[in-house]
Length: 446
Picture (tube, rainbow, N blue to C red):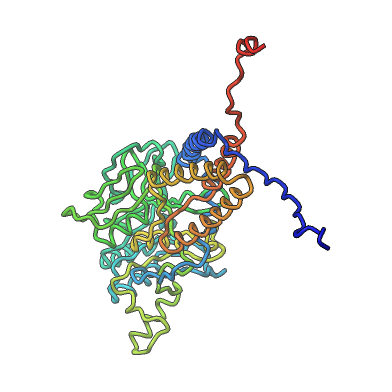
């Protein structure tokens, strides 16, 4: 027992693995990743601002407009008298006598103005036999606006005297030009205001924006929507101005600014579609006379015509048999419904707003540099996870920003930015930064 050792010798511990030495070229790789990130961000911004990505962005913006957003009450400034049924025994177009009766019924309830969205240009006696009667009622109503249709026939025709001209500044080469038109007849239109009702949808009858101005006979003229909006606000188009690519500045005759309407280089304004109807008061065309008769006899109608007081009343077709109907983010709309959505956009100043270019450029540069550097510092797997999380965050932010504030955060451009930043980060991680050996030095060593 005495010969036993007092302690059992312990197994010698295996030598610990020395830590991997830091990459001596890490700083240079980070600098390379940042430089490549700047180049990729610049390339992405050029694609974004040139419109190359618009074909991908537009459907995604339609999707955002179709989502539920902040409740938007239908406008209390607009009213709609809809021709939603064309009976077989009363084919279209209708006699001006029908419009005279409805307009006469509205006069007693003091609407702000009345807009006829259909082009009343038929000279057939079947439709024009009551033009004199219609003319007297138009004069009594005072504020009546008629629609015209612009054409390019190669045979210039004199424009309506009340089409008007707006002072314009900037490059107008992209604005649609016309040399003739179909005007409402002078027999009843007289001195009434006139606006062009051309809508210019995209392929597939998809209507995302609306032209507010056109060039006619070398002069900038207004659409029906702009003419109606100016009349409702009390703006004088001759005292207003158009700045191409920036906006239309609607002013009163005394110079007071009433609205600034953003437009692109073509003179188009993007419509902010809402799922709710544009006008809070809407009735069927044939029921106007019924409601008026009930009020005259002391009865309570389903829709009180007194509600049109101080509103702008639009009259036009909404029936499904109408040939021109447009695809929008909120469903299929007739021309008059689309134009009402456009006017509500202006009256409520509910414009769709892209991020200012300088802010977007700064964001893209910072994100591209950060993402590329993250790949170098964190490694492939961790960086991919971080970028995926950030991409999801950006999509959620884009939806929320549009629903709350109508601000457009680009999605295809951002996806392109993140993918490219990840690739350039990988390139910087595996780039051979070691200097090549000098052959003369090798000979000396030997």
